[in-house]
Image (cartoon, rainbow, N blue to C red; front, side, top):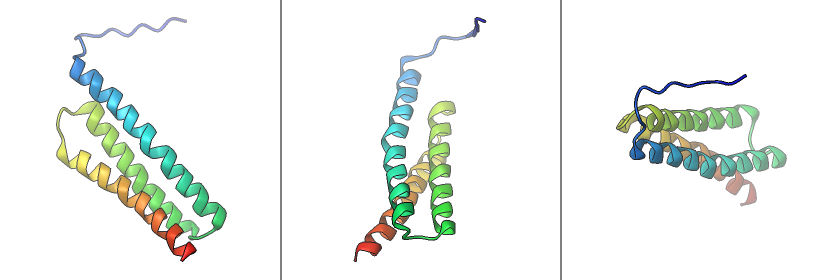
Amino acid sequence: MKLIFKMDEQITDEKLNRNIRAHGNFSEYVPLYLLLLLTSEIINVASFDYLLIASLIFTYGRVAHAICFAFFDYNPFLRISGMLSTYVGMLMLSIELLKSYI
């Protein structure tokens, strides 16, 4: 079965570059977070609730950042809250891992 997508307008180079950058950004942060999460789970440094909260914060950050890049030309709230949430989620796991080694 062949799928046909009809586009009413041509996609600009700027929009294409923004979508490429959004995918690149995802592929930079998510593997690092998953390694932190895996390490935290294996070492058992935090409770399930703590890991769940950190994961929900991180997930919100990634979704907000992706929506900002995919659907808006400029939305500072989604972009800033998305990146801050991404960093907070990663920082929560990093601090717990560092505390376990000190």
